[in-house]
Each structure stands twice: as C-alpha cells, then as structure tokens.
Length: 146
Picture 1 (cartoon, rainbow, N blue to C red):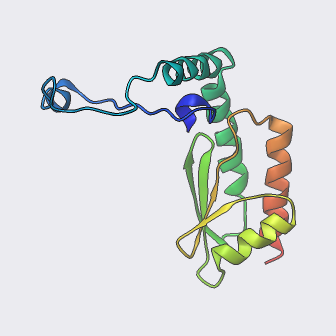
Picture 2 (cartoon, rainbow, N blue to C red):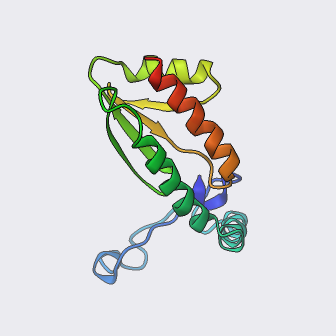
C-alpha cells in the first residue's frame, strides 16, 4: 500500500546478494511483475515522500505523540512504544483494547486493537501538528475516563 501511496497495487523486495543470487534467471516468474504503471505510481509516491519530507514529519510528530502518551496514568497504560507515527500503548489487563477502541471511536478517533491489551495508533504521514494534538487530546480524555 505505502509504496504507491495507496493508489495502485505494487510491491517490491529488497535483499542482499546472498539472498537474491539464490534465484537464477528463469527460475522465478510473476504474472504481474514489472508493471510499468505500478512502477510509475510508486516512483511518484516516493517523490512526494521525499519532497514533502514526510519521513521527517513522521519522526518529529512520532516523538511528540510518544512523549504525550507517556504522560497517561501508569495504572491504565503500562507501556508506550513506537517508531515514527506507528505507535502503540499497552493497557492494564483489567481493560479490553477493543472496548477502549470503541470509546476512542465514539470520541472521534479510530485506533486498532491488537491482542487483548494493545492499542495501535497509525496516523497518516501527512498529519499536521494541530491535528495530532487533537488526536492526543481525544486519547488522553478517553483513557483518563476509564
């Protein structure tokens, strides 16, 4: 999804020579491999990623998000973790991640429950700091009311 900006199905692999050279020419084929349109879309998406400095934005705002999430009450949130804008909180076992996500949804924020005690937050790379602060406010208010 991310390689094309969610616009067109495209994928790629990256490996060192030791791995890649185990496949000899003619041993592997792909029905949809090398699609010119998919490649063009991927290049355009990567250009946007670079030009708009979306990775830098993700790193900076991810630090803001983790810093604010780490201020949540420790009796409700056991752990905050993440990298860039892909983050999660591990909640106390007495709460159910699905139920907390439903409360977040009701308050205007979509989040993904994983396992029974983990809530994943993955805002888009184009999110602005004011938008992120609005999300943080919803998270804080929801968690504090548990």
